[in-house]
Image (cartoon, one colour):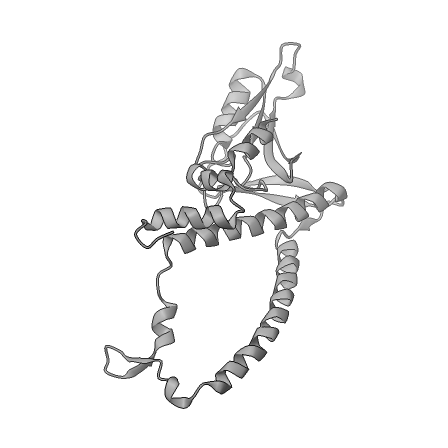
Length: 250
């Protein structure tokens, strides 16, 4: 890209290039806006009923990443030391005069430099890919170990008194697990005409924010309701893309 291109165009080009020339990644960055932070979470319970910490898997994964980074840093540090030793003293004048009149290191000013739109978009895409990888590993282990989930709503959301039972589950999809809530009416009200509705919510929301509406629908229509989060939303794994969204509904 040339220097004449607007920052937004440069940002999209960088994302397109770093995603392996994936048009879906660029379209997803412009189309999908999951709430940050999500308006709900899932508590995880082992088969024995013990509450599990979601941070355990993330910490293990980060430790592996840190160890691999430290190895690469050690290799780089040797090269850096050799380069620093070759620099002459008069070339180390990387200082500027600050507003107080004193000489200040240049690093203090450059470190506070605002990131460009392309860098912010790239960092966000990297973080989403990292989070998706961690969640897929965690959710796959949960499925094997019989882990169950319980819904925890954001404190700002009032949980209405409802006559329906709400079950939190994760449904396997392609390379991810989809966070879903199943609203079941009592068995005493189930009849031959009872139906199940699959509800796909809109953009910029999640199943936590839609909780009250789904409870009202299930209770008033006397039907079961399944509401799910798209890939990259809430507790669901993966990342937001049109192709993945179509796979999730299937």
